[in-house]
Image (cartoon, rainbow, N blue to C red; front, side, top):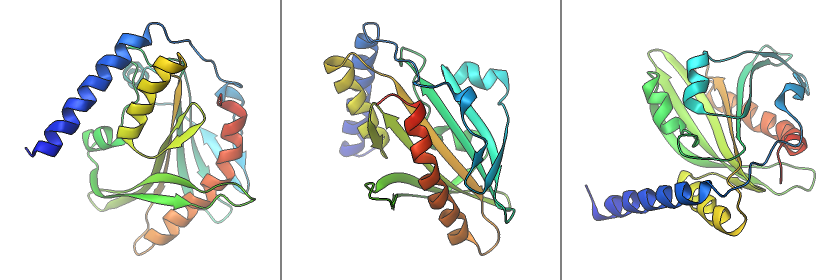
Amino acid sequence: MTWSRTLIITVLMALTFVIHLYADTAENTPLVKPFSAFPTRIGDWSGRESRFDPKVYDILGVDDSFLADYTSSEGRQINVYIGYYQSQREGDLIHSPKNCMPGAGWKIIRTTTERVALGNGDQNMDVIKMVLQKGPHKQAMYYWFHSRGRIIASEYAQKIYMVIDSITRQRTDEAFVRLIAPIAPGAEDQAFNDLSAFTRLLMPLLGQHLPG
């Protein structure tokens, strides 16, 4: 193990301790609007809500969540998951796909950061971009953290800001947003283009539900 990796692990352990120390005094911040009111029609994408197994929700520890499969007018698909935590107390921290997806049998082929142009005069946003594979099946993924008014595309930065906000703002509320599209043979670019286009449609809707 390199010194840099050892240092990162040590810092993360220290940050986790501080989060737990201040979490008890953090306020519970509810959603502006519950996810039960989240639209299943977004642009020309039509969605069907679904649910994880109850045991999964016990592990996730979310206060509210949304899970749906959206299909475009051309038949392409995107799975959307949004998990919201009013306060990230001990045992109720966001789980990274870098840990969860391999546990579900998916191999992480590539992880990078992607800048998505939002358009309409809005600033661009960075997301974590991932390619996964299980047997012959491949998936394209975007995910990011909605952290008390910030869009964060780094697990390390997400934890650092959580510590800062728990101390200075008494808030640890946060949302995790994940989009997945299947990759057809030779169509990886199309899958990520769909995720980018869907992200542009999704962002204004998230702003109606998540506290700033």
